[in-house]
Image 1 (tube, rainbow, N blue to C red):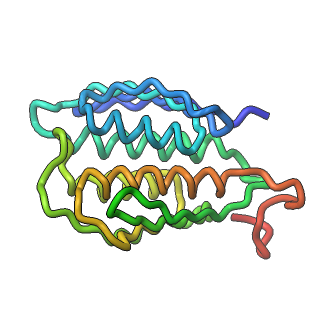
Image 2 (image 1 turned 45 degrees about the vertical axis):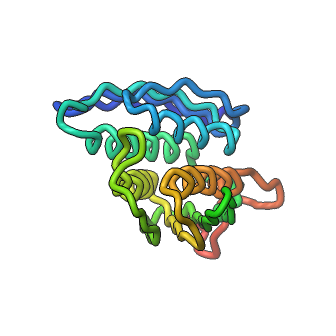
Length: 195
């Protein structure tokens, strides 16, 4: 069964098309109008081995907020739809990922109970047209629309580019583990019998 989802979302602020294949090979086509954000989504795709197409036209004449947040919403919706019943998935995933001086911990639970814990700090306001405070907003939007529990913690870090990029990569590795199928699991991985 293919675990692929295509989601379209259009508002007065953004027009977004996303296609996500959870069982891909890390291929991506990303165009959000924000070069650094494109780089982050490409890294997420490549390191999680997800095939990801994102086309977003947003009100960048205002700022980057709506484009980044709304893209998080749509990618989260695509994750949730592609997972379907969640039967057989490992449900949990985690990663501790280094990038030069930076070390990021990420943990995921695909439990249908959305929650974000985000513990990162930045010493500059933006990187390449991407407001650093939008890192949290992106992961908040994604975690709530995907209905996942997501923890991101900066263990060490100084360079904002490294902190953000390591966060996207750590998330991709944790999610890759959580969505993977384990043939030993019958139904969903829960003592309640439901997620």
